[in-house]
Image (cartoon, rainbow, N blue to C red; front, side, top):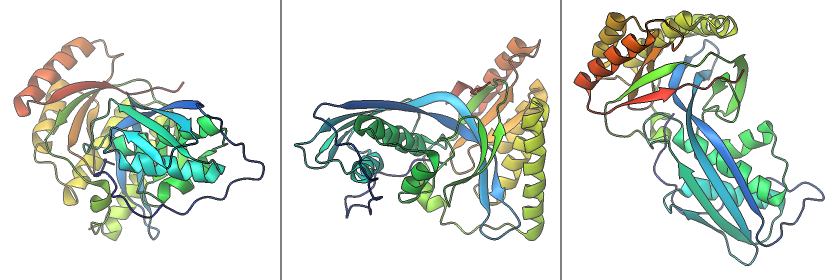
Length: 315
């Protein structure tokens, strides 16, 4: 999932009713929260049942941090940087849900690149919702946060720790798969950006056979995460990247697959609706230093934009 352009100004989204006895924030109250991003998805596709879009997250050690300062005398929310319009909308929705008067100042600081498939927009929204809720004393359990998120856009499962299967279009948790040992991702950016909302309007070309294969891949991945089997995780991620060529092709996938095979990596992971491809490596591998050096050199010959990422373990 990727970040789209800033949301245009318009009518406020309908508010979630404030709970009875909701606290009224005091001037100067400040809330802070963070949310991790992802490197694309380990798996993304569609299951056999109707409207069964899903993805499986790959959390990485890149974050958005949101800070919200309550200013009851202010009308609305000011956001910095100003283009983070979706985060502003989220802040206003949480204030309305809390029955909080006035507005405030929202600052969003992110190390996640926008429009690349690293859940930057989702991380902005989750961190913002929790920061505002912290400032005004509003309880914001996952189900309530999902309800707020789906009013804005399709969303990754970054509100949940660990590896999860998530229905990003209907914004609801499918299953918690667990946690994996840390992996290194050698990431390669093909350039450009992708708008999540526009991507999710694309008709899916999946056949019944494709959907059955995705169901089989999800079952394999569920077992692999439970068994902490990184080789199987890499194999499923690679197959998902290959299947995604029918929907959102990556022009360098063939070259990256050859690099993966040559260096003996775990597999290839794709930002299915983004611009990134990554080679997965196991830091516990005795030949890790050799493999990562070879991978970086080879990927740098394919793209000038190569970076290293660390996946998050929640053990």
